[in-house]
Image (cartoon, rainbow, N blue to C red; front, top):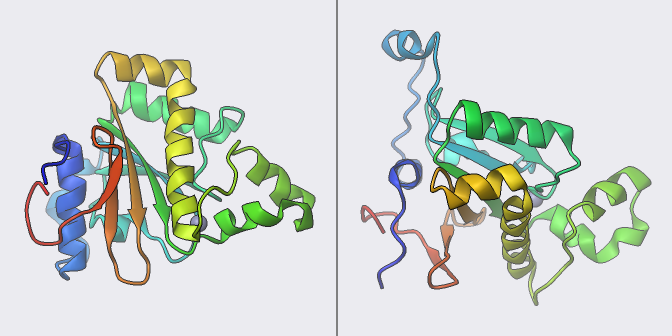
Length: 206
Ligand SMILES: [Zn+2]
């Protein structure tokens, strides 16, 4: 089945993922040549908004090298307009670093998503942060709820005026990904087909 083709930045992320899965790490210690290239400039192709879960390591999953991606992490991989840290990073990534993609990265067995079912039992600080997501537990399984949350966060991105303008002008692409901790699988949301599919660990552009 043909899926919506990723842009150049996404192809690099998916290619990096294949290298991660197949055990070909990009980082083999300090590289003086690369360090010199990035010492005074950066040109990241994507910004990844990831859950803060300790089992999900975006730089490892996408086999990235220094200067290739910006990563913002919080509980529930949330896009929250009232979070100054998030909004400042997003604006800088879009307008100064000119990233091609903003990626929401959810993952299997997400504790934060599971907590959405029991908000009333949580300490106030955790409850108020999770409530900011304006999402709720939707789905018959945790993984389904996580994927729905990723889609909710993509919708939140589109509601931010400077993001929606950049999307309309074709300057940035929004992507949803889901990482399976238990088997290393990666799923991508295909906006045209409105479905999730598992990214091949073998074929290019799949
Ligand atoms: Zn999580």
